Length: 377
Ligand SMILES: CC(=O)N[C@H]1[C@@H](OP(=O)(O)OP(=O)(O)OC[C@H]2O[C@@H](n3ccc(=O)[nH]c3=O)[C@H](O)[C@@H]2O)O[C@H](CO)[C@@H](O)[C@@H]1O
Image (cartoon, rainbow, N blue to C red; front, side, top):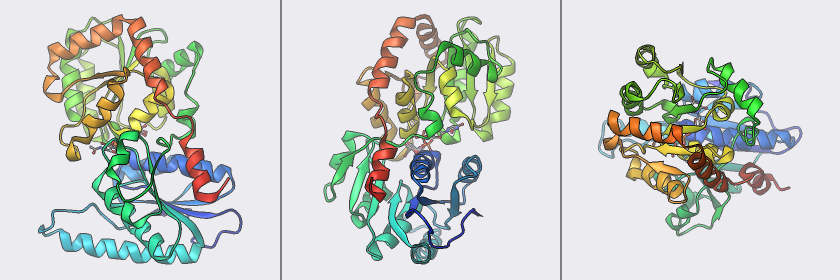
């Protein structure tokens, strides 16, 4: 897929490659940096993957340039898919080298995942300033490899620095899209309007549910059962189900007494964050960054099968600082979740305290700091 990619040398401003494909947690921070660069008159090109999530999410940004690379995630070494991985990797590497020359690229930034590796390596081979950003407390394997081919690593959480022993790691925070950043400090009127825009009541305690960019079946199913034991008027729910679970969640929601709005994917996350009083979520690093940007306290259920259990490390970074609580997926029983939701819905003061702790973890503008480092002030 190519959109708005002219592949011609920049007439004005600097040309920068931002590799951010594969999942929303890489894509949206990449978009945030691109928005900052465009606002300064530069020409970022966002390199994404062929995955559906990249296609869906990038479609909401018609003013940015995207190009999809064939590179895919690394399979097991002896698997039959390995030769395909190598072929697609080399093809992407060649594409990136040609793009860099043709567009007169001045810097390359990789936001994580295996689709970031070919652009970062191509930048390194062509002697460009090359950077990697990792948003997690425990960095991903692809970034740990990519770091060997870059000048400097940018990190979203201090805890990640120890995992990049051979490269300088600069704590900058994780970039946040401009609309989401604008959601901080919303007024009561804006909150009421955001709720109504989703078909919710303007003045009822509101729970946002999100399983990250791809949804979370275990959260959906746990919540569907738990809400049966929560009084109707205790809360209402803005429930982002994930595209593949929409039908199942709509059916569950139809049997509940609470007011529930179901969305398969939310392309105005800023309104969802404004509407919510608290969130039940996975512990992806970009989601957490956005909660901290607006001060939204969270019940976090780390995805237990995430690489090296990194979502638990992310979640504990936030909850150990008072920004919410961790719930193990194995404890996601209807009774436990229902009791937790009732407790959270009932306690405005506790939520406010945790919201303030969440907000204190927000970093003001990593996207501007990264843009400064990429193209100068
Ligand atoms: C299973 C897994 O390994 N997931 C990883 C993946 O998560 P994932 O891709 O789910 O990323 P995050 O939860 O960090 O971020 C999700 C992003 O998608 C956006 N969004 C989500 C739902 C929606 O309907 N609309 C929308 O815009 C959110 O606002 C956020 O910007 O990348 C993260 C960043 O490296 C990691 O921390 C996660 O552990």
